Image (cartoon, rainbow, N blue to C red; front, side, top):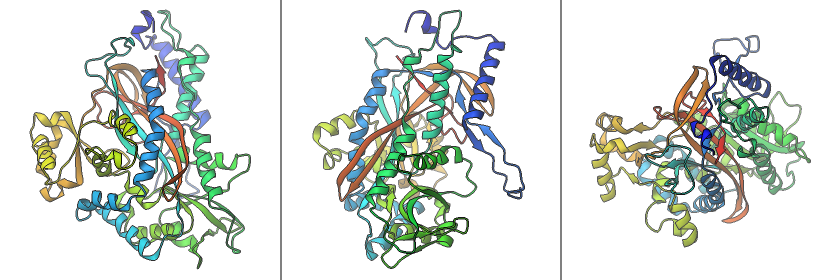
Length: 507
């Protein structure tokens, strides 16, 4: 990064800036970087389908190469850790037991798991598509910074084991920024430029397809005479606005050298209406829109992470999936591993050493921020004192075990939130120290328009796993996502309008 480049990003005239934004929108429209608008009142298929470009940054955002590479080096160890945790029923139960009376999602999942355990598991192979999210901890630091005296560190925001989204959008945003850099769209009179070589490639789509393809092969040959072929079943939410992130993984499966059949079923209705279990528990998918019956080799969950999905129908559908001989991505225990309560428990002294080597444990522990339960233990009472203090609470985030963005409570809002929440439900939350990232600058392009100013970014590293009774069969780094938001905005979810997909400009 030269002296001139320290004014990054380059300043453009209004005319050139608008032309660049128009170029970006055209790229997104031509490459499917879109969110689908769902109009529940429109008669389908007569009603028109409309889409809008997903939020992206105009420029890639500065990010330290050393920390980007470190996150990738850590991912196989994190994969190993969570594969081991997902096999340890006793540890998981001890960890989430306090949640069961107060957290309906935890209670529903454990109820289903108990039923499966009583009836016996039909599959001992599990698959995982994970994502570890990080921010840079660097209070008072501005990007770019020189490598000498660079007082920043990599800190984990959360670890995701269920329905890890954003990979396709991230890949397309990276391709877009690389295209713009290659065409010279970022060159400025002030010699501020974006190096094409500093924008990393992202192999996320072929990596995710390869993981599901490996799970498909690990299932073995088709077993039921009632099925024409075996295939991967994507379990998705109805009225899905994020099909442009999900569908390309299906297409990539069909595009493998040996194509892997892939199909979709809405949760829970299609599962209940169009699947059956054979006596030997093969899961057969036979919807009216397919001319054949598919034996499901892999169940890939992209639905079932919200509380309202587990009414009676939702529980019945998830139970059927879990009882089947299909490889689950993830299994119920793998799903529960995504809970913040699990992340919090792994921070306890000696917890990591139960699952990984002491050297690996120290490597992972270096990425942890302080995190506390909000129960009635000694540590929990300390956390309650922090969370109810209007001054001390500013440095913390209150997190439930929910996915999808928009559920956390930040800083000044925590004391009032707890005051309005029955105290017996406080233990459903964990208290995490806030990461204070360095300040960077960028221009955000979202459905709200253009917005320039200070921003913060979050790096997600994807991992893919396949394991059998604790023996890891596949452990790979799959790619990355990179999201950026206005530094005054708390949440990061792009599809819910908080942030934008981005590409790290490595320095």
